[in-house]
Length: 248
Image 1: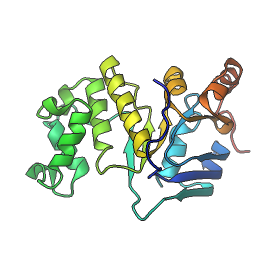
Image 2: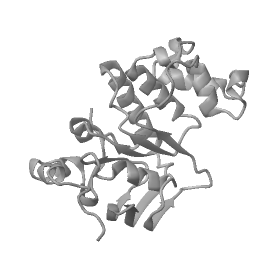
Image 3: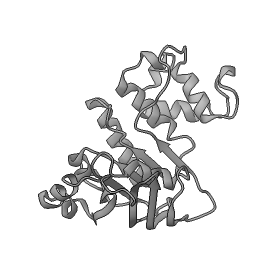
Image 4: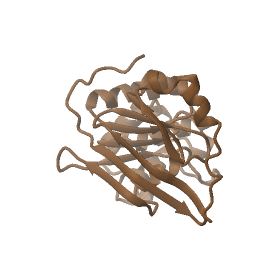
């Protein structure tokens, strides 16, 4: 599968990271991070653990204080951001079903009152898209890691996002789940959704992304995948020690 041409104009925003700096305690996490994400594209971020990838995402989501300019240029009045975290932290002994989780994440009505009729069609459609409709009554704690990741993907679809932020969504998926994810990615590209995607599977990035940024505290490269993911550039990216710099 290769990156397909857009079927319709982008509905997602353009993103501009302009010299983003982030320091936690005495450790500099991000230093002068600057790159652009074109609207309606799948833009991957790759790099070593501790290189600041998730921290950069949190600055975009407004969860981390930072210095520098971060600009989102939306094409219209609608501004919907979806987010799929790397993993779901919860007490697996809780009697929380897939339906309960979706209700808690996707509606204003308290989850213990059940699914709202207003959002149930959207939840049904999202669970169907990730192949989890038949497991909606299962306890979240009884699902496999890959099944929980599919449920996380489903909640990221409600409401239909214009910007979708993915933090290593393939990490727990089995082969069937990976196929589901790739189908979703193709659908987002066709819809013109802007996708910002942290991923460690470089082969998947090479096949599926429109552009890739290498991040290890600083931006080391930013280019189309075939140009970015060369042995020389990857050696430089993964051989550095991203968090070795502390403030004096």
